[in-house]
Length: 112
Length: 115
Image 1 (cartoon, chains in turn yellow, green):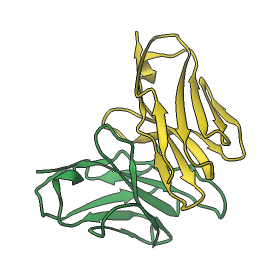
Image 2: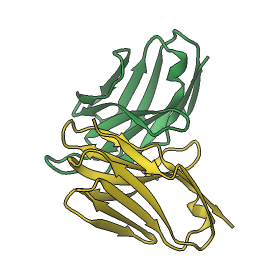
Image 3: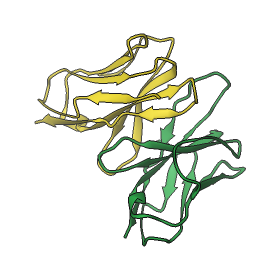
């Protein structure tokens, strides 16, 4: 059974710092991995999607990597800003049953 | 903004009642998925519809049911509501091509409170 874990559960960093959020998954049989942002009480905004054949994707200050064999992904945020404060979720789409499994998220707080 | 809309935004029901939540997919998308997100948790997959047919289901009882219409809008119906059904319900639409991993676009969600 696929399980997705995100560490840390919460993180506070001063504005301007670079930071890394971690996601791990137990079954490497995936189609893709996706990172989302969720503001309090709101829906999810897709940030980056990495296909299983890819190693990384970049969008602006965000870079996501995927190591499928070790079951790990990281989301790197450069030069963090207070507007980056949100919960960040990762999700994998399983090849075995085509379901999308989410982690519980990392709550990020950027201190002005 | 993703182009996916959900209604209503908030809803309060009592135990035993029935509820219908609605989702309008992004134009051109042929697949819709529904998720339940309890407070402090990640979204849990309920089911997915592809071209009006259920195309996968998570660990939810049969009192959770759905429909997808020809215009790709969708409904989530929950019968015999329980207190634990209180959550944010999210729908996500995508365009699925065979063998391709698609990006899902989420709506803002409907927050359901069961008293």
